Structure formats: structure tokens, C-alpha cells
Length: 213
Image (cartoon, rainbow, N blue to C red; front, top):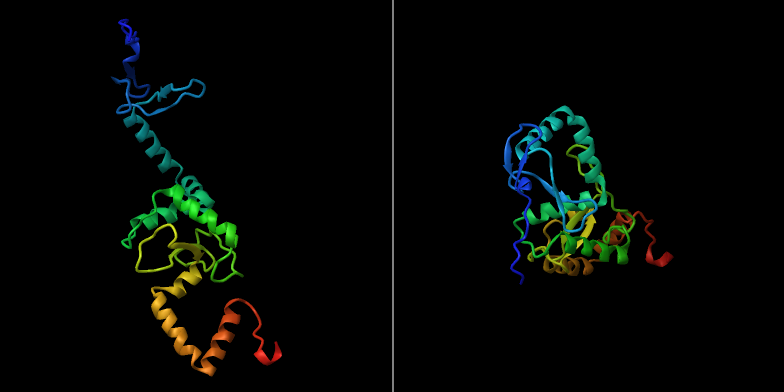
């Protein structure tokens, strides 16, 4: 290592805010920093101090309330915005979460799309949607995150993206109860017939009796 001391421009140690004209140390505690548009490994600090910048943004939100609302709604309707909201909700759940980060969460969605496309795995005739801004009413076709085994946390291999309709109907039933229930139904000719009719109706199909197939 050389003995020459690195030159530091003393005029760059501090920075004066263009709004309040107060001088602060040129660092991230006092000014927002962003990557320089052309120089590698070089950063630029905003002209206003963080306090003035925050004050300006707060006033902008007040003056452009409706514009901000429409902008937020547009973002939430986008694929990334919608899944960001799903991921945030999942992380806050008390059911437990083993998904590492948002990228792993999105990887689960991309892998599912390769297999099922953008259709509900439970109801293949329902194309999954990202409809927002309809008040508190749920949209049956909207994407929701489901745990295949409800006794386990959200984890890669235990989540599936399904329609809100399917998730709502599935509720908290366990695979054990579902298997038991199907076993009881299969012992009854009339109940089996009802299930077949109901299954056809739910999948938007016409029921055809066995003797006519």
C-alpha cells in the first residue's frame, strides 16, 4: 500500500440544502442518495435535505390525492404490484412463512404458470384475475395464495395460486377430512351422483349420465 494520502475535496464534506439553506454533512442521514446516471460506483445526493424532501412529498400527496390514489391502484393491478401485496399479506400471516423472499415467491408463480397457465388449478375454466378497486366485495376469479396442507406454514412446495372462489370453498379443511369425506360419499350411489352433477356445474360443463357416455 502506498503512503500517499488520498485527496478529499473539503468542499464536498458538507452540503447546503437548497430549500432551508441549512448545511449538513454530505451523507445518507441528511440527504437521499442515488446512483449516478453515467459514472460507475458514483452517487449523487439530492439538492434538498431529507427533512425538506419529506415535507415536499407530503405536500405533494395532499395536493394530488386523487392522482396518487389512481397511481397506487394502477400499480396494485399490475402483476408485480398485485403479487407484492399478496407477499406482504402472507409475511404478516400468523400461519408461518418459510418463503425466503419476494423473488422465491414469484418463482413459485412462474413455475405454476408453466403447468396450469393463468387458470385456477381447481377450476380450470376460471382465468385468474387481478381486479382491484371494487370496494370490499371479493372477486371470485382473483388470485389468492393457498396452503395445500393447512397445518404447515407457507413454503415452497406447499403454496398454490388459486381463485378466491376455490380458496373460500376449500377453507380450512384438511387432506385427512377430505379423504374421509370422499370415502363416505363413495359408499352412497345417490351422493356420488350428486357430486358428479355438482362437479360438472362448478366447472361450467353439462352433466352426462354414465349410460349416455
